[in-house]
Image 1 (cartoon, one colour):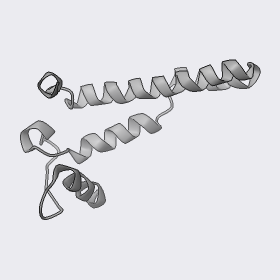
Image 2: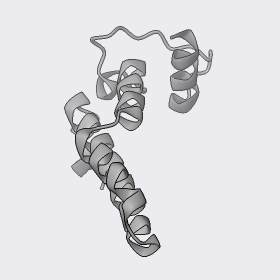
Image 3: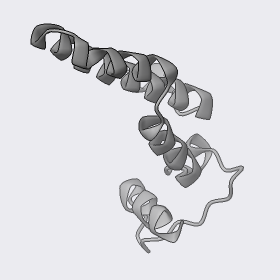
Image 4: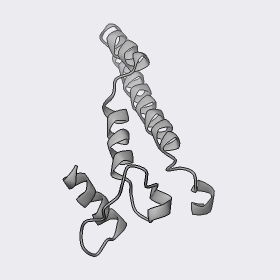
Length: 99
């Protein structure tokens, strides 16, 4: 957890390298990145959902062209899972301000 906090501090530009944050601290309030939110994003990327499992199970039985489409679909599903995790963590609350 300490390494994740150091990584988050590095991205947020903290001068001392470590920016203590509690679990209830929101990234928009502190101006940094919440390490707990990063952990949840990593979990959403590594998690295998039912849809991806089904597509990957079908992949060996398809032509090479369709296997490439399966790979693309799995990547899109993982990207969608990241989006959902970011939305649920509140990381996208200030999206309109960023644009």
